[in-house]
Length: 394
Ligand SMILES: Cc1cc2nc3c(=O)[nH]c(=O)nc-3n(C[C@H](O)[C@H](O)[C@H](O)COP(=O)(O)OP(=O)(O)OC[C@H]3O[C@@H](n4cnc5c(N)ncnc54)[C@H](O)[C@@H]3O)c2cc1C
Image (cartoon, rainbow, N blue to C red; front, side, top):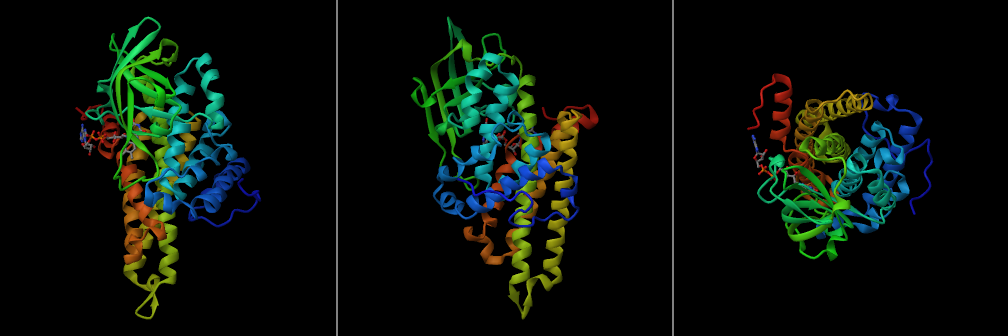
């Protein structure tokens, strides 16, 4: 059980130089503090051994439903709360955040946005309780950035589709009860096919990918699909083109923008604390101009990331976003997370390499943030296309 939360008081003060907190409602603040306290009590003290062993931190993750955050908007969270939850989880650990992002965002988001009422009624209740775990399989071994060109195929055969192809990097897949596989049907139409109990599905094989330097505690799998039968009733009802599915990716980019801001904020907080405590040449290293230059650069980047997230939440709430606006936040914040976490890492000197100090985890996770949910180059090119009307992606 998560310890009871005193709603008026969080366990610690987070870095919030421009008083973003003033912009929050009481409900948003309460949600944020609930997750923040969970991260302080459950995630930070316990995560490192899981990271080192590259194991799923199930003891931590299984408590997420108690926070009332699974499903995001489906659990009654507004867009700012959705962002704040992701921010706080990312401050604790990127793998816990990614587990949540895949299950609650990509998988539940796909069913919530693109499923029929019957499909939602069939799968959502268990997903909300996390008695069924979701995964989202888009990327393939030969198709990453060019996701529109996926090669997995779905051929109709009576009441089933027969899926053939391969997927790579699929988060939560080996733990999942509902694995969404994106494929093209015989008419070339894009489709999302929900595989129930994938571990027991004939023709489907999954293997976790080992040797990752980032997000080590989230399991990503290579998947092979050989004549895998999926009932026609499991094809997501409201998707026939890449554009439909891209709504889910848009939500993913929203989340990752907040995730990047959370990882960077945590790294800066650790670096500032360390710089004030660590002494060299008879004084705290925070007294050296070169260290202050790093701290100020980190603080100003983190503040810009936080401000961008808050305004993005407003645009999301008012339905004023387009793909360029979402990609700009992902592009900007992922780049800056990489910068800030590496400055924080070097501020700790040798100790910054140590997993015990947490920054190393945030730093390597920032490498993943930089590449997933559309690599930095792809997000840049989406913004470029939006600004100029010229498509430079292909
Ligand atoms: C830890 C992790 C978790 C993931 N989880 C999931 C998941 O749950 N589900 C899922 O479906 N996918 C997942 N992914 C996949 C992720 O979305 C892809 O890695 C990403 O889209 C990039 O694809 P790629 O790795 O194949 O790189 P590639 O597409 O091969 O790109 C290689 C390089 O070329 C650049 N490049 C490609 N095209 C262009 C272009 N037109 N112009 C300029 N540069 C270009 C890229 O930016 C990159 O730098 C995950 C990845 C990681 C690392």
